[in-house]
Amino acid sequence: MLRRPPFPRPSAAAVDKARLLLDRALGPSKVITSPDACLNYAGDESDQDPVTPDAVALVSSADDVARALAAASEAEVPIVPRGAGSGKSGGAVPVGGGIVLATIGMKSIKEIDREELVAVVEPGVILGDFHAAVEAEGLFYPPDPNSLKMCAIGGNIAENAGGPRAFKYGVTREYVLGLEATLMDGTRLRTGRRTVKGVTGYDVTSLLVGSEGTLAVFTEATLQLIPKPPGVVTLLALFDTAFSSGRAVSAIIAAGLVPRCLELLDAGALEAVRARGVPVDARAGALLLIEIDGDAASCEAAMERIGEACVSQGALDVLAAQDKAQRDRLWEARRALSPATRAMARFKISEDVVVPRTRLPDLLTEVGRISEETGVRMLSYGHAGDGNLHVNFLWNDPDQGPAVEKGLDRLFRAVIGMRGTLSGEHGIGTSKAEFLPLEQSAELIDLQRRIKTVFDPRGLLNPHKIFPRRGHGVC
Ligand code: 2HG
Ligand code: ZN
Image 1: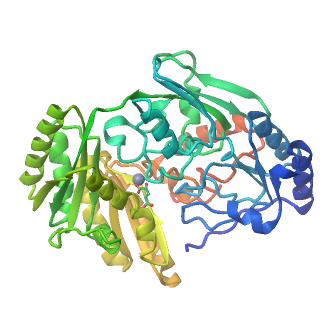
Image 2: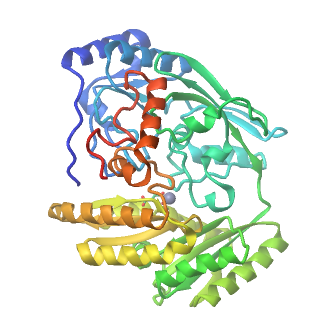
Image 3: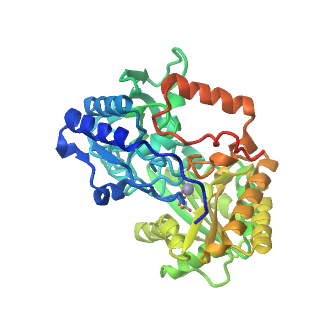
């Protein structure tokens, strides 16, 4: 892994005090202190080294959350909210030790209102379970990060998660109408609304969505639903190079077509798919996985025009999934790409950079150059319709760490040079914090630090995330 200096941890006296206060506030059955059990809450799905917390609070209500926050405040130890631990940027890793506040036990879907198209959920609800529940009512909740079988809605909100369907439907923020949240000082807030429209006051809900667990702890979310689309068609377009598949993305968008998913896999990602036993035409060096939803007639028309756009950019073949089983197999392979690529090497870093869609071919070319110059194996896949690619660095030899660092720096600078952004859906966390000054001005970073101070004056809630260590900016 990459070498990063550790953050300071609380003193032994502060840890003892925190454990005692937590025990008193929640009862011993909701507090974990044994190092072995705490280890289960040390890491997430990012490249951030796991850090074992000093204690874990297993909260099951908003009152428990307030009590755990009060214990952390009084003992002056960090406290880090955690959903399912599926985050990709270190957001839930307790890098400064202290308490992990696990909200995964808050699993109630409190309400699904078919007339208002609104649902109310607790933060520990697993996204896939929520999809199943709303779809059983003929409704639809579009955000679909690929970890949907295990990720929790609280974490999705904290990271403003996206997923393949974001191309047509947008990301989590678009569906969060309101939040119940608790601040470090115990204040319980209800932000936002339950109505479709509403512009009262500052949009605090939007500020909290994507705040990576640094401002408040969510205890309830009011979510917008939409009617379930009547039909879905899935297409696979094969190309000889990633470059031509990138151009096809632009051709589809320029034709005014809005598939719900427009995913790209380059040659390296195809290798991972093939290694999982999914046969992909040997001629293909890249593919687009495209999904259209709507009524049968509009799907049919869109399918034809998408096919034409792909062929205009040299597609070798465009195939439609014949039935649900075939469709599910394709998506299973796509959704399994993250673990599949992880299995390809001892170390993996997956970035989630975004560039203007027309610059995708340039990004792919740049990735090829970086790989060649650094000697690090790289591959890319992801949400090409949004210009959002997961550029993966894969390596086995720890001595390649500096080359990976160099590659990361080059990648981020190239992306910013294309007027792109560092993160499309995984957040900044610890893994990209040092690079934030490449994208944001010192004034903007300072304003955000001051906002953080308003919510959490002593900096105990999920410290060391998003912002670079002082004096260590990359600029
Ligand atoms: C995906 O799109 C996820 O599969 C994870 O955002 C990406 O781990 C990855 O490379
Ligand atoms: Zn993704």
